[in-house]
Length: 445
Image (cartoon, rainbow, N blue to C red; front, side):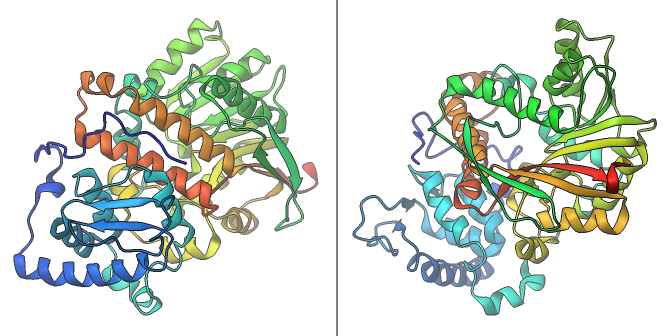
């Protein structure tokens, strides 16, 4: 589980103009009270988990004492760490890592243990008070048609060159599907469910082929072939559109990232399919036309729970009779989705503003309630995402010199490493899943 962190600064220089919330100072009295409460809760949590925590020069604590294999968290600056957690909860936990207040050689292993207990980390009495102390998303990050492009740009327009440092040659920024073994799963609404886990530990050399396998399976599921009219919601850097065109389909692909649009068009033209694929800078809600297949890879996570109905109604409205929909979606447990849908998180603040993960139940329910579409098939392959993220993180950490040449700093290094390992921990623990879902109108009409 360990990811080597050589080259990652353990005490980054923090530019206050780039990272204002990491350098802000709160009133000392309030910081002291919040920090004391955070310390008490944190210690009660780690004492029942198989981890080891070194707090400054104090003795190591945690339920993993005596086990040298238990992940070790080293809190370098305890006062700053507990003040950050007391003031910002899990946002402060992530920010304090960004600022170098704490470190962990096996960051993914540590976060995996926390993720596995996500529903019970905070004592139940405090969970009942959640609405009073957790942060709420800024109104400017709500995914209205006027806000969404800015939300998308804050992540996907960072730099095509930066993404290229850790993605494979397909430039696919979503879970790969490695060679694996199938097992039957449990349906929610009569759909066919398949579970798949990687057969062996994947290597970097496996990744591009596995990304192609993921895309080809989606296109097969949506019935994409010669003459098929395809709508792709969320272009990425064009790999799916290229493969659909190679099958003889015509594709309208919509994105809100100008950086992705430019490079996707370039890659599509280089592949010889500019006459078959249009990549438009367009909100999915404004798409017009009729399509035999609608495909969307890990885009629904950026829609926002308030807009899931609108997302699927749009798909339902443009889908031709007899058409199919294939989406790849990251999902979370339904009870946690309900508990956290109004919570503003570290991921929202620093990685995906306006995003929110659905549960499988929510995807089934919203289509039953608001569309004529029904989920007919699901492939669950969350452990494939854990391995995809591991390979991305290893590649990212190996490219820090190039990252710095592109203008990113040491705090960004730690932020991105935390994001990739935080995500990997969610999938390894089973808290998160990724699924390919096929939707059709009842009776195939």
